[in-house]
Image 1 (cartoon, rainbow over the protein chains, first blue to last red):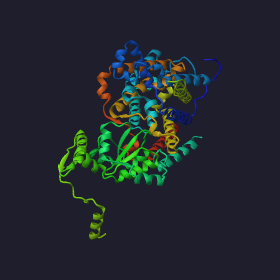
Image 2: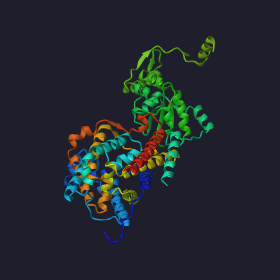
Image 3: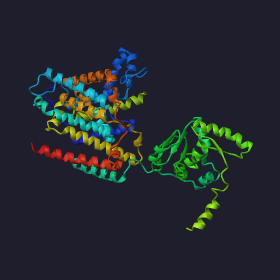
Length: 174
Length: 195
Length: 181
């Protein structure tokens, strides 16, 4: 982190939300589909499985949806979108002076503990995203704006699950 | 700024509630003379037997459309039929290469739907003029009259074959009384009954 | 895909990443604030985005500028999405990030973001490998393309209005909660 430069303030959440909504809308118009994230992870996982055993990948009921003979993971729409998002996230952070090596955590939490919870929580989200056919980007945002019932069910139960457990994690973020 | 956005959202949302559907109104153009001539030359409809042949032979691009309400469609439908209720017809998407055959119970709604789809620009559209009734009578239970001519008997072979393909039951019996559906008879009945 | 069609997802993704980072959603601390009820950025951003895209798509469709029926709508699988949502939500609050924001966090140098990315990958990989045992549940309670207007017997536009009102009401409530610590 370069010395002497203050990181910029975050944008107003409503304006940022409208901006995000316009990106989502542009995606509907130009690509006929909305945003996503977990699907890219599924393609990546499928790609790994296929690299180890193409026969198994083709026979697996889940991975066969994402990979197959002649289907390159690198040409998958969501994979490219997530690569773009990584770059966009970095670019925005760079311009705002917010790029730094850090493990964000509460004052009482060690880095190993934080990383362990990060991995475990991530794994749970992976399981949930498979079952729900998406995550906050693909279901709550994209499907939510298109009034899909399943997307709203996902959104509500996800918030419910998060709030149900929130008292337990309060101490980790002082 | 955010107050303005909220007001805009409220306005657009309110108007959306009034507008109802996120589709533009379907506008159609009717060339009355052209349509009238098509109707007069009987190029607007197909016989049940012809439709049956198309379905059996897997005619390329064939779309058999039932314009009745979904409950009636669930109750009984033609083979290969899809249900697009009349009031949703404007929202349906057809390819230029499709051959659309519309049907309804008696044929009236299908004939009206024909005019609507022609107005929207579809060229290859037909309807089953006698509706489901015609299908049941001519395909599922075709009748070979007892006094049929040899020519009629020969033609019936083909009809019976198609009927059996669809699980129908060809039958023989007395020829139906001539003029039983004659228009002048119906008018006479009306006169006796009064309006 | 051709060169130009590689361009679309990359550009959309870029804008997506920028929007998330600008909003501060690349920070686990900020996201967790939603669940400790100290920072309502998540709610504000999500629902502003949903309302914007929803109104935008409705009106573009209504004006005949796009064919809304040609846009892909995720199908509904009631139970898997309900249970999946619960599990996802638990993971969200334990990790502090979600799939999209974890990528933004990682790209900003956050090691915890990188760890969440790894965790999600492992979770999806494991679930995919175990797929045969969950497949019947995964495929259950399918309702196809099922929209809120159909469930509540409203026109599409009326459902849009209701969601706008809920969102605006939510924003009012959240502003109030933020003003009294």
